Structure formats: structure tokens, C-alpha cells
Length: 106
Image 1 (cartoon, one colour):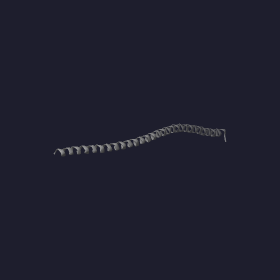
Image 2 (cartoon, helix red, strand yellow):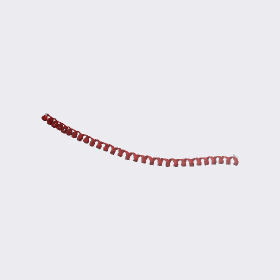
Image 3 (cartoon, rainbow, N blue to C red):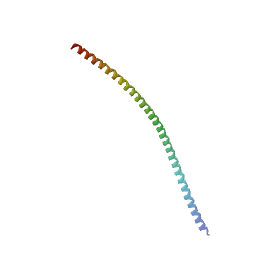
Image 4 (tube, one colour):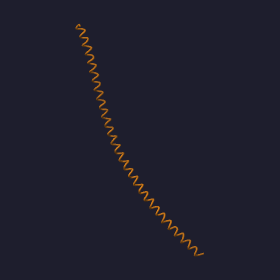
């Protein structure tokens, strides 16, 4: 093999090594971009998780508030029922009193 042939082979090997080095550099850059993207994604997921926990607590508190309002509404309904009963009793008494008063006059 002549010196020229050996130099050509060295040039081919050098070109391959250069291409490999460029490929490795591109791969490292791509990996770094992927890691940055992953870090942002992880941060976003953690933030969303925090929001979900806050909303879950708010929903729980809202449910408790609704149950409390329902309980107070039942109590108000019961008081209204008692008031209606007492009012009806008063109305009946007044009607009977008026009716008896008319009957005595006739």
C-alpha cells in the first residue's frame, strides 16, 4: 500500500470520526433539551397536583357547607310546619268563636 492510499484511508477514518463526533454532540444537545423539557413537565405536573389537592379540599368544604345548609333548611321547614299548625289552630279557634257568637245572636 502506498503512502497516498494510506493517507486516503486515514482521511476516510478521520471523516467518519468527525461525523461521529458531530453526531455525538447533536445527541448530547438533544438529551439536554429533553432533560429541560422533562424538568418543565415535572414542574407543571407538580403544580397541577397542588391545584388538584386545593380543589379537592374546596369540594370537600363545599360538600360540608351544603350538608349544613340542608340541615338548617330541614330545621326551618320543621319550625314552619309547627308555626303552620299553631296558626291553623288559632284560625280554627277564631272561626269557632265567631261562629258561636253568631249562633248566640240568632
